[in-house]
Structure formats: C-alpha cells, structure tokens
Amino acid sequence: MSPLLRSILSPEFGFAVLRVMTPLLFAALGVAISEMAGSINIALEGIMLVSAFTGVVVSAYTGSLVIALLAGLIAGIILAAMLGYFHLKLKADIILAAIALNMFASGITIFLTFIFAHDKGTTSSLRSLVFPDIHIPVIKSIPILGEILSGHNILTYGALLAVALYYIIIFKTPLGLRIRAVGQNPDAAESVGIDVNRIKLYALLLSGFFGAFGGLYLAMGYVSWFARDMTAGRGFIAIAITTLGGYLPIGTFLASLLFGTVNALAIYIASLQIPSEFVSLIPYLVTVIVLAVYSVQARRKKARKPTKAKEAV
Image (tube, rainbow, N blue to C red; front, top):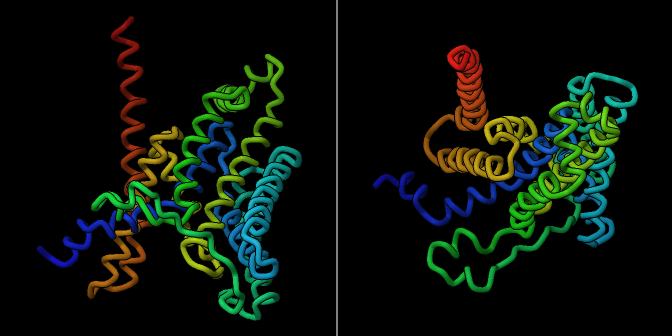
C-alpha cells in the first residue's frame, strides 16, 4: 500500500476532513439561507475576512473569547446589513455590491492589520486567543471513530449544530416559511402582506451570522492568527457547495463534506513531489468540474419536462 493511500485510509485523514470542512459548511449555510430568500450572498468571502480579523484583534486586546466571539459575529452581521442596504434600499445589483464589499473587506483588513500588528501580512505579533478543543467523553474511547470525531475545535461541533439550526429556521419557523415564500414567488408573498424586502434583509443578516462563524473558526480555530485574504476563495466555493446540495440542510452538509475531503486530500498530496501550484489548484478545479456537471444535469432535466408534458397531453 502506498504511503498516500495509507494516509487517506487513516483516522487522521477523517479528522482532517472535518477540520477543513468547518469553514466551508458555515459559509455554505450562509449562502443557502440567503438564496432561499432569492438574494444570493456572494459577500461571504468579505464577511469571513472581517469577522476573522475582528475576533483576533478583540481577543488579543480584551483577553476574552466571549467578547471576541460577539465582536466577530457583529462585524459579519454589519457587513451583511451593508449588503442589504445597498441592494434593498439603494437598489444596487446584489452581485456588484457583494464584489465591492469583498474588495473593501480585503483592503480594510490589510490596512488594520498594519495598524494593530505593524505587519501587512499577519497578526502573529498579537497574542490572540483560540477557541478550545472538545474531547467527547464516550466517543473518544471508541477506536478509530473516536480519533475521527473527538478532539475537534468547539466551532467544528458548532458547524454540525448549525445544520440543525438552519433546518429549524427554514422549515420549522414562521420566518422560514416567509423566507421560502419570498424566494419562490416574491409577488405572491407580497400579495398576502409579507414585507419582501424585510424578509430578504433578515435572510442576509442570518447569512452574515453563519458566515461570521466561518471566519472566526479560520483565525481562532484552524490557526491562531489572522492573515491577509486567508479565506482563499472559501466564500466562493460555498456557492458551489450549496448549488450541489440543493440549498437543503443534509445536501449542503454532504456537499461540504465532499469539498472538505477534496481540500484535505490536497493537503496530503502536498507532501509528495508535486508542484505546489498544481496542489493549490485542486480545490478550485473540482469546484469548476462539479458546477459544470451540475449545470449539464440541470439542463437535461429542464429538457425532459416539456417532453413529459407533451406525452401527458
């Protein structure tokens, strides 16, 4: 058995998959809930960056994980609120507004990193805090399974709970019903008294809430510092994940697991004598392939519907 295959089949690889999947899952849930309301949020890249930076700096200056968590969440929600204001109030195109916010987030975090850490690259000079790892009492003693599931950062388990939270919000609450109604037919929703813009804003704020957790994990769980543009396209990969998962809780989770596996595999392949440029390309290449396959299948389904309708007539 080759060393690479042995590594992939090891419990450590399963542990790495869940670790790498965490920020993707948070971002994907953020994209999914905004898309459910018909206002896709592609500003998750910027939201995660701002939240990651805010959490690191606040934790370094206050010495409190709770305050850092709250500050990071507020920062992400504020950026999502800005997107909602530009799109819903000023009637700006949501894609263009989101791109502008992503560029703003990238620039402002680099500037503030230099201000607070005197370095344009990272905040490694700051003594920022890290969210703790959790060892599950019973599961940690189970061979193999315990090595995969136990010992993760608390936000990794939070990401799994976020899937359940997303399901409850969308399918078990009046707000979720309104979000789905607005996303499916905003005119019909408005005709029964639903404030369409308000519901879209709520969905964007929830999107910022989920995305902020992804950013906090990157800087205070995955590593212990903030680095410029450290999201590395995860906010955009989240769009592919939600498309593949059909914006549904389980589908989004499984798609996140798939992309987490791909990213973890890229990390393991990096140890071989393969050009680093190719290794870095793997996650994005898989994203393009998955979206291409999904688009082809979606077109085939649409092409079949008229044929079935004619047969029924």
